Image (tube, rainbow, N blue to C red; front, side, top):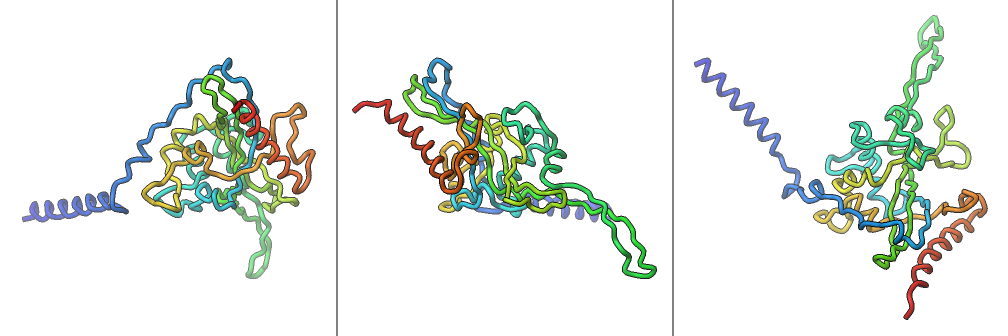
Amino acid sequence: MKVRILLFFIALFSGTSLFAQNVLDGVYVKEHTVTRRVIPYPYLREADVMWSKRIWRVIDLNEKINLPLKYPLSKATSDRKSLIDLCLDAIKEGSLTAYNATDDEFTSPITMKEIEARGGAKSDTVRMQRPDPPYDEYDTIVAREFDPDKVISYRVKEDWFFDKQRSVMDVRIIGFAPMIFAVDEFGNVREGNIKTPLFWIYYPEARKLLANAEAFNRENDAERRSFDDIFQKRMFSSYIFKEANVYDRRIEDYRQGIAQLYESERIKEEITNFEHDLWEF
């Protein structure tokens, strides 16, 4: 009798566990994005590159078209992740390398602790007063954690080039960096809303991770794109803040106000016109 009761409870709990594991949040099992392979770049020789220009641009996450890169905030859903959460999780598990915020040449890897410290995570000792007699003071430790939702934009480093073998103007992203507002020692945003990189990611290394992660499609939930699709198909809005130049200076160093946007557009048009000028009709 005891054996039958024991077997009954084992079967009951096993069935409950099996049922919990088979819960499907949707009408079908999503297999397309998670099993995608990265589409390799066409082979490129140095001899085939007849012209190239290095560009640095900024993707502002407050613009509507860029919202799929920003949301969901703080892992609010298990269905998908924001770009910053995706990168941070991969860095924690060691499948992605982060590089120093000031190193866009990817020579100085950094750890997750260094990223969190740069993002504002720290412990402060604060002097407090007891609410009850004798009202003496004591020291307490206040921990301030890094909040990934503070990321406000992304800096992208890319190379535009003309491949004479294929007769096309092409672009390849070299790396990207999440940007946050610079803060003082008390965690307050510095005057002028200065933006600073959090860390750099080498894009070719991150492509597999980005290709297997869904990004929201406001038009069709059954045809969600990956983050790699967004970058490769140029489905984002951005502005140029620096081009390769002999002085190694940014646009803000020699243009002010709305003139910076005009200069950014001038650089874009220069690239477009260069390709058009190569053809004769």
